[in-house]
Image 1 (cartoon, rainbow, N blue to C red):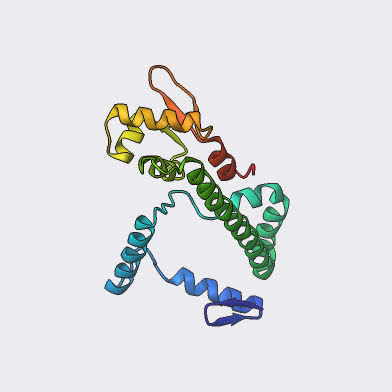
Image 2 (image 1 turned 90 degrees about the horizontal axis):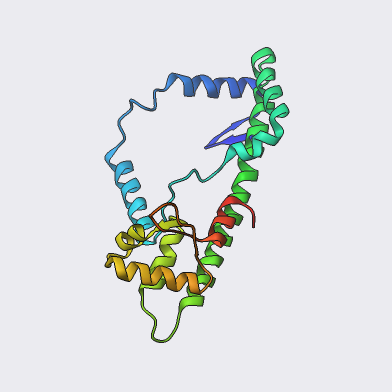
Length: 196
């Protein structure tokens, strides 16, 4: 049995009916209600104020499907030749479940790393710019001096000094490309890429 919203689907016919229902709707052309637009805007505002920006997909389904390509194509073949939607949905729900667990673990590791890095730069007389710069590294883990200057709203010299402080603390490494200086946060990149 598959639960979808308030409907429970217990047979392949139910899955077929659900798909026909979806296919009959043109979601892109339907205007959103003022209430749904307001809710989405409020949620985006809360995320922005909390410093949570999610430019990438939350679930990387390809990372799970790619090593299981045979099952993926067998499922598609089963749907097209035998109408076996139930097996396909079970596989796809497995993909979503596994990637949701992976994303949650990665988010928790990123949050713990952010706290640890902020703790490394927190001193009694330290500037509030370093923790703000660390927060920016979780949005953009490779940053230029101009990027830091814009993020912190400071001068070029101040951005450079703050980046160099993070290099000295072992949080950033310089990866200069040509004439422009770039700095990378290897620990943040490692967690984001799933290496840790």
